[in-house]
Length: 408
Image 1 (cartoon, rainbow, N blue to C red):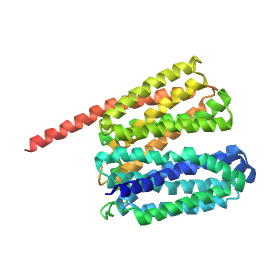
Image 2: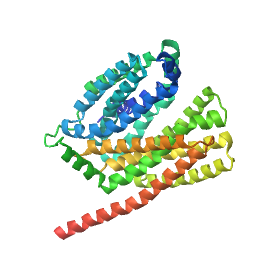
Image 3: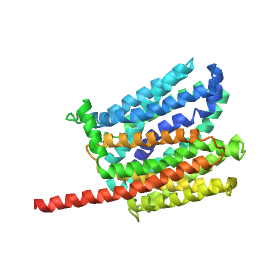
Image 4: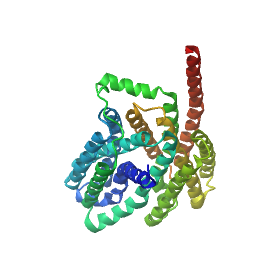
């Protein structure tokens, strides 16, 4: 594979990965305009965000079996077409109820892009390169929080919130054309793969029971939950506690995004010298230490605005190191069930993230303590799962080796 071809594939796969997050971030600044246009409240408009999250969580599990049965591109075409139709439906929504339904359908469509991109990384690239490729996908994904809210705010103010969804539909059309002409079919359809409920459930159970999968899926998802806790709590922490302006909050959000994106790129170079397991272990220990300092500092009011930014930046750097490596390690054992494994990985990450988002909102304290509390809880639990899971992986490897020697 030429270097030009290598980076073109990563750009396409990264764009597929970013479609869902871009669909979230781009319309957030339009909430007040949507509420006014549809004669409702911003709280009701927020239900369209909730329906999107529900659609993503449910849709992840839908596409895994389809990708393993029909190959990667046919389900991807279906999902992108569904996304485009739903985006146009959002444009024509004349009630909040219709917008909520269209956003749910749009999310289900976007899931095909996210699950297929992760699965195709496992198909196309050498196993030892997977962590590097996932890190580069995060680089493309990082454009969403940096670009989408700004573009969405300008479009909503200048042309109306409806145009945001036309732009999203056009983006999906361009991605579809790139998939058609430049992305190879990386997995041939498997007629023996059954889509009946019982075999599908058995395939999911087979994946879940694999120690390497459940160890790095839950470990990575819990570490990634720190990012969800930050996103959910940051408007309160920065704009209500520290009284920064909306514009200043945008700059802080962009700065902190650089920590997550930048560390994921550092991971690309670290995997040349260290194993992914070593990177995850070290970064997770650092995340636990940072979260302890963050919680104590928040409870004692020692940190202030700058100190809080530093703590969150450090935490996001750890997540940026952990995420691509745990994704690569979780999917490594699978060939035949790679689509099922990818969908389970994504669904687990979104489910834990949704719980964390709800958990943050349940705290009434106007401080950084809720955010820090959830980050320390999730990082400690992630580390415990890593320690226990590595023991189970080692036990299974030794058992296999023993069976192999007995057979000879």
